[in-house]
Image (cartoon, rainbow, N blue to C red; front, side, top):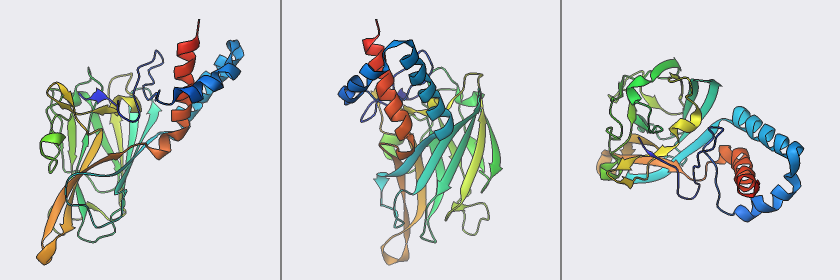
Length: 253
């Protein structure tokens, strides 16, 4: 399993189970918490956090090259959105933004909260190009994202699409893949917000993809491993609520 997100934005585990709580620049939250004193203010805070979490989902723009050549299409190349359907079931939408005809997505790599076996999850395809297979090991931190080199080892699972030329199920262009992921009763979007593990070290991949068919010199093509760009624009409302919540937890009696 990966480590929680802990670079520009830090994942903190709260009693509520929400982990995406950035605490950098906490003075902003400190100034806001003064206005949220008392039981009523705390109730408003929790309500705002809950509404933001349910309504927004969690959006990751995948637009940073980890290894290989940069795709000729403009980044972000993929938008991934995790949304709670109900406890234990998460929706994952993967929207491609590839404007170069030869470019396509071969694999998507994901991480999980420690304690959840990748093999325990059930993936159901709702729409879009059908994945051809899943690298879904029982053991944690044992999947690799193709094209990513040593930095893209130690993931938890990899979703694989057909790569052959002319494949009708090839994931490319502006395709949108919709998946339903069912797992333990507590499964929620934030359970996927962990980095890969490189031995005892934390890797750079929170969510990654392998883009193939990138034009190269002489008419050839090449590939690249791409990863999330931080911060995630779609998570902005939750980021604000997280700042305030973190400050409240520090100030409570």
